[in-house]
Image (tube, rainbow, N blue to C red; front, top):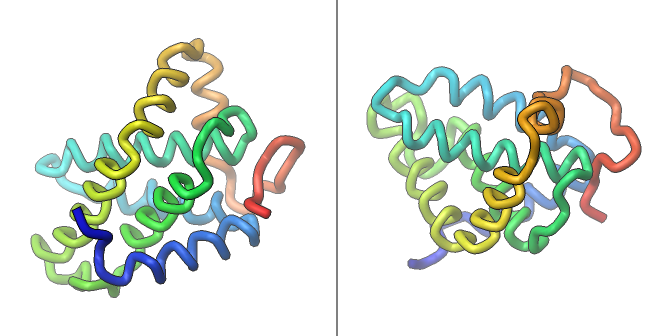
Length: 151
């Protein structure tokens, strides 16, 4: 499957987001938009939740066993998802999510080995550990030891 059109632009933005430590704000935006998806998008919501969990575990320093290109692709896909004016504007209800879902599907397919490894790691964690690792950050929550920036 070909790389989605304009995806390189989002990968560049993803790198800037990670370097600037802006991942928490992105994850909060993803959570807000994900909650607005209807019941017809349950599978997409689950996939978004997985990508969000991966980013949270990486940001908190708990899971670093991911190829940096895969992490950039995941963050780029999340940026694409929250950006309202992409290939198909999100305000075109019903159609506006088609391109977002296509980008998510591309990332899930392209990086399936990395994501499967994360799912295995996640399955090995105690539920109380996951509650802490996957807790959404508070707005403006400072970085602490182990929490990441991509340098």
